[in-house]
Image (cartoon, rainbow, N blue to C red; front, side, top):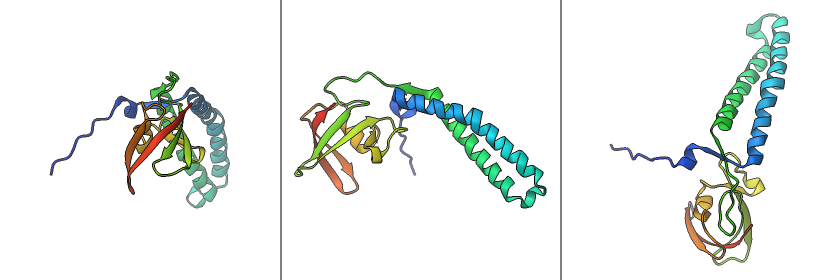
Length: 164
């Protein structure tokens, strides 16, 4: 059985971030490495003082919190180290940080999204990744361009209404 090799593009290997998200991640990393580590160490010390560690729920909870925090620190260190900060927005062309209003073919309702790196994507805030099927299909398009992309419900066709 042959496996298909999929080469990653540079944008997929790098962590594309806006300056705002980069700063937010650096702040979180700083807080975790200074404040949270100290608090967890204090919790572990207190839990140890309670006696038998094999049946000490507080100690086990503190150890689990420590493991999760250290994993998050490793993840953030990797993200910050490999981040590519994008800020050069081309007027009138969909790219990173573009706020794009689109309309599905045959419908009147419009939807607005901001194109961001995958680390920032959040549908609740209408932020979609440049690597998502919709985001990828919009990249490089101009106002009034029509584009299509595949979804589980089949091929969808949209028109770019506005780019900010």
